[in-house]
Image 1: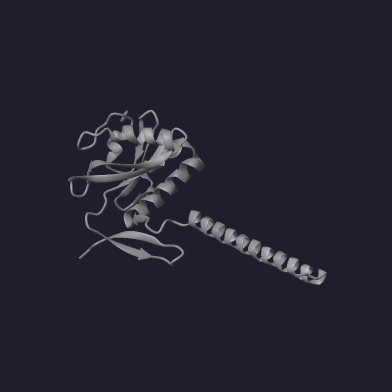
Image 2 (image 1 turned 30 degrees about the vertical axis):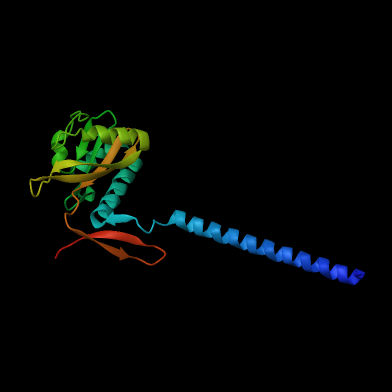
Length: 200
């Protein structure tokens, strides 16, 4: 079978067009995957669980950290008395990386000026030691321990979130609610699963 020059040219053009279409599809897929990946990095995972209390803790902690960043380490004294760093039962406390307790807006103010590296919680855990170690290695973190609830006077689990600013560790702790349920809030693009206190 013979092919004319025109037929061969049309055949070559069709191949080139098909290759161009394939390349366009591949490029579109790559762009789409990159877009999804970028959005995923900027959004909380769908299964992220943040309690209402923890949201308050994060807000207060960030505020306290910024205060030290702006004013310097000596500004920890503001945590002792300023209402700006107290949110109902939540308060800010601070210690140095060598274990010296610097300030507190709550019941832990009795520790001010003491070296608390080996101070135990209600069940004997040296939780300040763990806070300092994590702060030195990671710069921030969360530690769980048992502390006397100032309202109920019971030894209940406490979660403390902290961040290091130079030689100062700024922290805020809270007693998790005993009864919680999960509630989804926000749009599909910004899903946060929140644990809210069950008041029933």
